[in-house]
Length: 275
Image: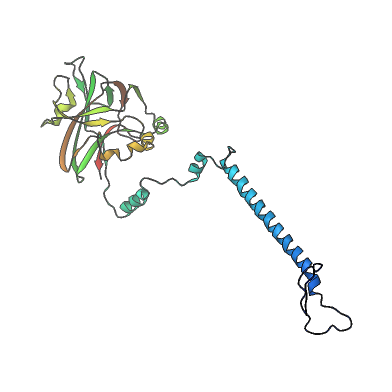
C-alpha cells in the first residue's frame, strides 16, 4: 500500500505493472521540471504586459507633449479640396450655349450726364467722363425691352491687370464701397437727359441702394458678398418688357473719376439683367 513520508517531494503514482529490467516510472521525477517551465512562462507574460503598458503610456505622453505635429492646421486645410459655391455653374453655361438659351445681359447706359451742386446752373452734356464727389453726381439712363423680370445696377470694375492691358484706369479717394443709386423720375423725352444742370435734373424718388466700386475679382473672394445681387443693398427693380430707368449716382464721402467706354474690359456703372 502507498504511504506518506516527510522526505517525499510529491505524490508518487502507483505503477500499473511491475517494473521490468530494473526500470522505474519517471513521472514523479519530471514534476519539478514542469513547475519550473510554468513559472518561466508566467514571468515572460508579466514582462510583456509591463512592456505594453509602458509603450502605451509613452505614446500618450508624446501626443500630449509640445512636440511639433506632422501637419499644421493651415497645412491640413490647404490639402483639403475647396468646395465651390456654384460647382455646376460652368456646366450650366455650356448647356445654355448648346441649346441657344438666352442669358442675362450687361447693358451699357444710353446717356451719362454730370451735374454739379456747387455750380447749379452749369449745363453739362452726356459723355464718357464720369466725375463723382460730394458736390458732383452723374445722371444715368437706360431704356430696354427685357425678357427677364428683374434687373439691378452694379459698379463693374475689372481686374487691374485687364484694365492696364486695355489702357483703362480710374482714380479714387475716400470710401467707394457704398456709392448711392437714387431712382429718378424719367422724362417723356429722353433727349432732355443728354444736357442738363443741377437745377434742371430729374427729381429724386427713392434710394434704390448702394454699390461697391472695387474689383469684381476681389469681391468674389469675400464670403459675405457671395450672392449680393439677390439682396440689399444692391439696387434691384422690375424690368420686364419695355422699361425706362433713370438714376442718379452720388457719393457723399468720396471722389471718383474715370472714362466709361463701351468696350471690354468693363469699367463703370452698368445695368444687369437678373436671371
